[in-house]
Image (cartoon, rainbow, N blue to C red; front, top):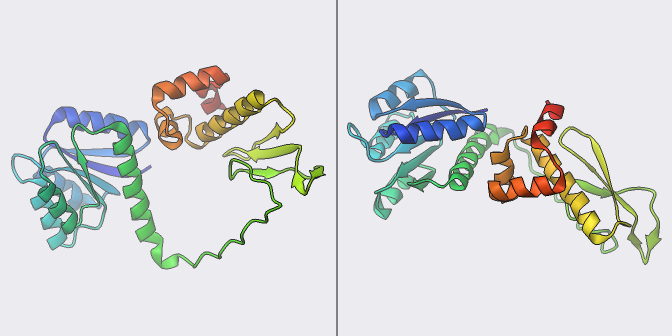
Amino acid sequence: MANILVVDDEMGIRELLSEILGDEGHAITLAENAQQAREARAVGAPDLVLLDIWMPDTDGVTLLKEWQRDGLLTMPVIMMSGHATIDTAVEATRIGALNFLEKPIALQKLLKAVQQGLTRAQEVARAPAIAPRPIAAAPSEESVAVPSPMFSAAAPAPALNGRMIGMATASDAHGHGYTLSFDLPLREARDAFERMYFEHHLGREGGSMTRVAEKTGLERTHLYRKLKQLGVEPGKLAKKQG
């Protein structure tokens, strides 16, 4: 969960963003103008700010400059506008804005930008403690290519021409194991894999259809149809994971 400050003079936009981001588990603070945004920032730095450019008292770019001048621009800021020019967006980025969203804001673009902003903030916070990552050894030509990093060839298994065959195992976000047989007909094996795949992501995201749709790259309506086809019930799965 992150603390997100939403600054916009349009009540409808504030309520919509609050509902979407609240559904994702974030704590939302709302401000309808620059003065309220200043007061919210004075209480403490949020994890992320969504800042409208055109506001009646002080525009978002001016507020961004104030925060930069006063050393308060210590959190990622995503600018929003339905009328801003490219020059305005470039200026905001030059001052220190992380991203720019054009209204009306598409759901997937919003969630992606917020996730990128929160990831950037986490990277900055832990940067001094990061150690160089070891270079992974190149996989052998004799190894099996299995279509998911959560899979590994089960042992023991018979070999044919140096390639592992038979079974693959997987674990979901809570360590529950699954087994997929390579002896199944292609359609059944594919359905079994997709069922495991979606159950894995639903478990990781606490049953949030919005987050799973973003992770898997599917529209929510397509995702609902797919889960129904596979017999996956998000509600029951979320209760089990909880």
